[in-house]
Length: 359
Image (cartoon, rainbow, N blue to C red; front, side):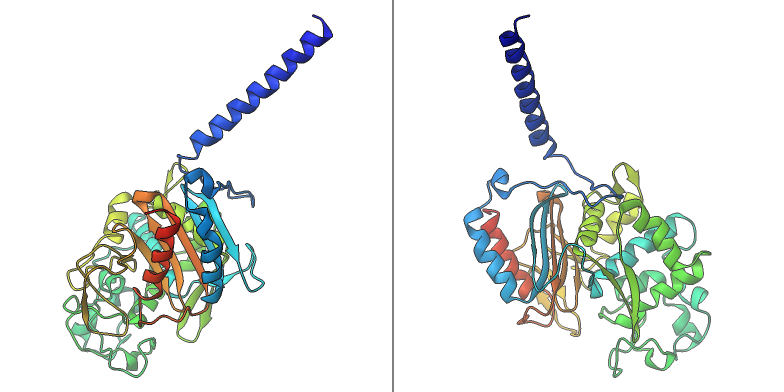
């Protein structure tokens, strides 16, 4: 073969290979991507490739900075499309999830149930022992793990501190399952329940069953009565991918789909926008933390109806939109919410995102 023909053959083979690689990349962008658990590598995709309104990105970034944001990520099918950091934060900087971390506990409770360590109908007293409240033995015994997951334990929310888990703070007001109130103390005691139910304890179990299989980093830290999870934004994104894929990580079903459906759908008729510690959009009414009022309409009007969310104090946000294969992460300080709970900053942010996504 002549040298010139050989060179042409090599060049043809090279460019053919490039074309095939590009086509594979474009095709794979529509499949769900799982970042490797032993590497910082993460596939990305440009917003231009999705036909998003890229001219709006500078305005969105300015808005996020003005709203005291530290980390912001948008993922499509698990790939990072937009990733911004502010205030000296990086992809490795840990941040508090605050109450968005409740979703981690809900997920872990489901795994513990499928492993046979508990059932949601179990009385909380079975694991905490008698006298964990100041209620009568009968009143106390009627509170179940399901009540803790759904904010329907019935404790008196007029106490000075609804985060207080001391028995003196846990008083009777309503029968379990008859009233919804965002009473943080009853949620907080889910971790001690799991710690008692699981032989290896909650922390080791959480590491083995949730963190290790998905590559999530981070740790639980105690602040007063509250135990708060800290991780970087990408770890929150990993948890988002796990839930976008209905509890399945790259072919391994960590959480059965029956429980997943219960967790991410209306769990009771008292607050239709609440599952098992997850917030749900698209319902006809909702209730908010620290109030007994029922609001009519969707939780976040500007967001897609099928959005589910982990929401935490100072506007920690884990949004998942299955119909759009979208995950949106926001960590930072208080964004200046005009309302005491969801539908303030949340709705404003989703108004901005709808412009970006060309909804």
